[in-house]
Image (cartoon, rainbow, N blue to C red; front, side, top):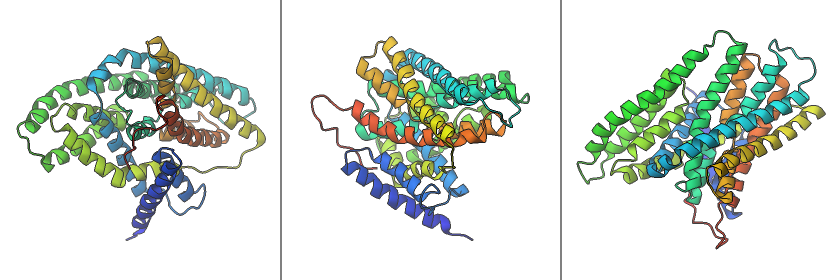
Length: 400
């Protein structure tokens, strides 16, 4: 039996904490340090930690718990208020990056390649990669800044959920054109079915669980265990039966439990589970995924332009959507920047596209660079745009 996983987890926990405190000392969110820890420990730098199946599974539970925690802390009233706005923000925030990615790819994807799919589909696919949003990085940063329940924070959460659905639909359409085995109608029906299921199950769950927890004023561990189990079950059902991202299921599970009078107690215990083990492994795992291949001058130029377009199209697209919906200029900028991070979502999309011949291997390096930089700069930019005018001091950050 191999015990390397014990060493890997120990190194990850220590390095993410040390670098998190270091970035905090220079007035940056601790999540930046955790991301840097993964880069330094992984194959991109020192190669001390391998991305094993155990680390991958643990990191997946980490992001699920992170989104579950975000659901627990969500102001449902505020989320309902920004429902229409979130939809508009998400739609424009998908269209603009899609067009931007298509344009950049069309500019560079001019030579011969070994792919059997048309270059039009290949270029569209690069645009689809840019539509992805990894809201988990934004959630952790906003929690650290104490801004998760603001108007902009709720708009980001709502838009990110819708963005996820739109991204699945767009990816399904393109892959179905490249792979006739994929049926668009089936995927769309599954997505619709998930939300019908979530609505019906939500009513039943509210009657059973919430009333059960409201019977006593005692803070009992059974509530935490059942809540965590429910989170994992809902995440599994979303992914395995309906093809919807597991983090979407986890977030909805958190929202359902947030109506309980034991919400704050449950949330505090889930937060402990998250920051002691799961979240550090998740954030470090993003860096562990990074390998930087050798790239020629044209590919480096493609990477640079792709990065600029990736950042600007989300800020412009989502910010424009927020402005149309009546948000202030500052709030619109906050929403736009909150949607910039691509994180592991873009890498997953890229891998799926490459598997069906929609992306050249030469373009994978620039995608990785774009993912790494957008993931690191998003927390930094969020801290800047959420800074209060009245004081240079931000709310005291909770240690993770």
